[in-house]
Length: 140
Image (cartoon, rainbow, N blue to C red):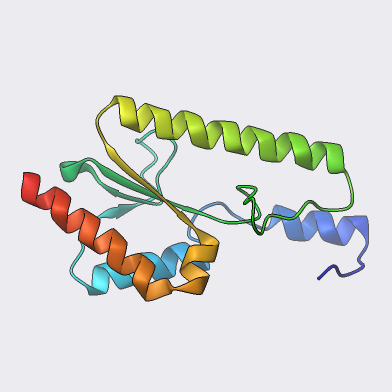
């Protein structure tokens, strides 16, 4: 739903959105931690700054929001400055692909979790992440 507001107000709101430590990322990390998972959050020394990383097992997890990562199902294009947003979202998608390719080349396990998957079935999505991590641990 679109709310009418001044350009200055919208700019302030958009500028206050930070790319790490979002409510969704915190919820996922708290649940994985509660289940015994041990990891680091927002590891800046790793390419792409994964939301969750288990370096020992070469696992990185990215929680992708439908808005910022231009979800085909739920991503929306703001009405103002559409050319800016189209370019921004295209750059974001290109960067996501570069990061994914990088970790695949390095032999890492990369998981990209969509916001809509977590909203639709939070515990089921976390169950699948947990199972994947446990399977990887068995290899070591």
